[in-house]
Length: 135
Ligand code: FE
Image 1 (cartoon, rainbow, N blue to C red):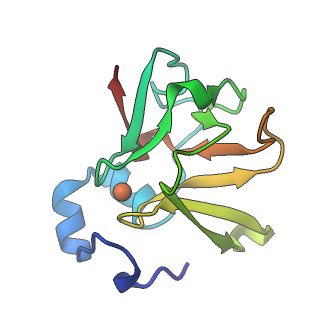
Image 2: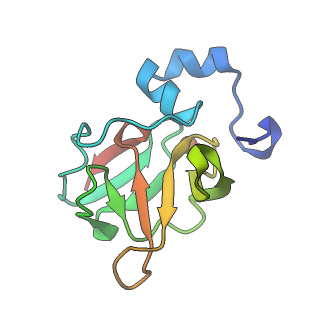
């Protein structure tokens, strides 16, 4: 995955990120890992609030756009405007749209075209990459 260091507003060295993030968060957000399905407490959470980036706290999704995808990962049909960036991910013999925080470049998950109306998109997110702030 190529996300050059200088393209984001928040840039840190791997050492600096390791101080801020848990080992699991580092693996997902900085090394494009994927948490095990059905492990995030945020997967089944539907109360009102905002989901922010676990690394830099930029607001990414609101609870109004969250839905139960049945995948075991927190899923949304629309990000907050300007909150995410995308790249092409060709790992695991698939071509997928990778999704990251537009502010710090932290990997969040992937975007798929099988989501509900009104967007038809499914943003499949790693719960460890998100922090929930209740309203
Ligand atoms: Fe971020």
